[in-house]
Image (cartoon, rainbow, N blue to C red; front, side):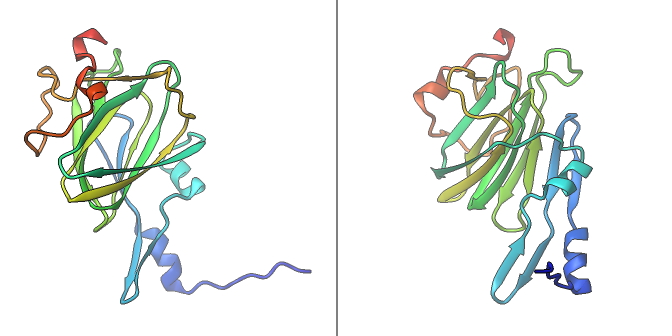
Length: 193
């Protein structure tokens, strides 16, 4: 049987040409706005396509997808891996968060600097982070569902954290009195990494 081909309309091709990508002052961080097609039924977007993302310089082999749900004012992080470098692409599937990455690469000219962006299910955006960053977020909506695409399998023996309120990093979190796990409350300061 011969393969069948479907001809796509010019509109379909244009959909994938509208992806917006912004580089951050931290080398290895991208803010991605996937092209979205909306109509009265809802929307469609391509959240990951290997070749297109490789053209952006995202060359990692993603091996695991994770999904987390958190309620309003929960702050998770700042998490990183010690020995097994892990890149991530974070997408909010439902709700709204303030997403943060901190450069913890000791030889980096931006060591200790942070980048934050609001991500939501409206006007979807993604944050790509190469390895060498601590990641965290706080939830601004009643609930938020996050999808993480990661380049290393989860290993509880390799995970570590940077304390969320480190005065040397000085993140401007948009919430007061966050809900934090006991583990996240015990993370190390930047000077101790």
